[in-house]
Length: 305
Image (cartoon, rainbow, N blue to C red; front, top):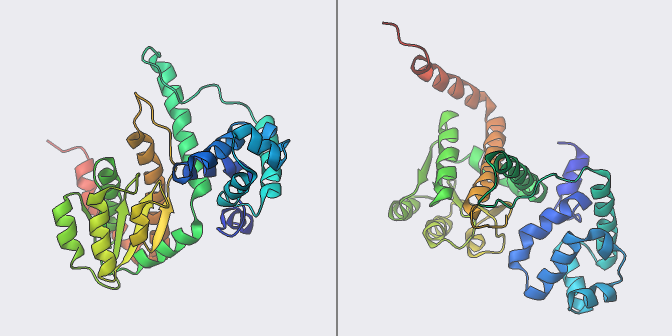
């Protein structure tokens, strides 16, 4: 990764203009309603808001100047002046690029070709938002912990359990001891056995799933390094996480529940985590992966009669 990219994603730097909309979508659920109005306004009309003073934006959104400034700071900017500059940059970026031909809204009577196009666009946006908002410092720390772990436990339920199983099987293929727990009782009883040097990973889009939080809390109390993959960085699960990896927060619709898009963003984070671990353990990971391919090769070849 180049130094320029690292600077863009640094937690100490304001988000790049192109990442502002993703930042708004991620943080909006944890904001107060008045701050949400400000955030939605700047994300929806960056050009118009860039032309407004702090007083003008406060009047437009029916809030106060203090709320506007607090929203700017929550989004990662030192003050409103810096946010206005970013909005101007975002507006210029949007004007220079081609507008998307489809939206993410899928109607009951949409032709299947339109469904494919809309879903493809929405998946693309979800991945872009997740990449823009992912803290690479936190990701690096999570990779370092997992690469040297004695044992890795992964917790998830529902759609998140599928992502957890995907991560565990990837780690097993490169020779690490990893288990995905979907039964909440077994998750807790296994978490009790963890200690310093072990890693526990909780995957929950809402960040408030009790069946996932409980085993992570037990692992945290036992001294294991804990990681949360969630769409709500300030949710209850984060209080028991040493490292938080944030996924994109997508808008639900009647025909496309959040579980679909959240799974897409979770899988991207899981792949980033896995590749980082594989890079860190390459000398042992490469032979282990090769051995697993060899062991399964005969199952992918046509059987002779």
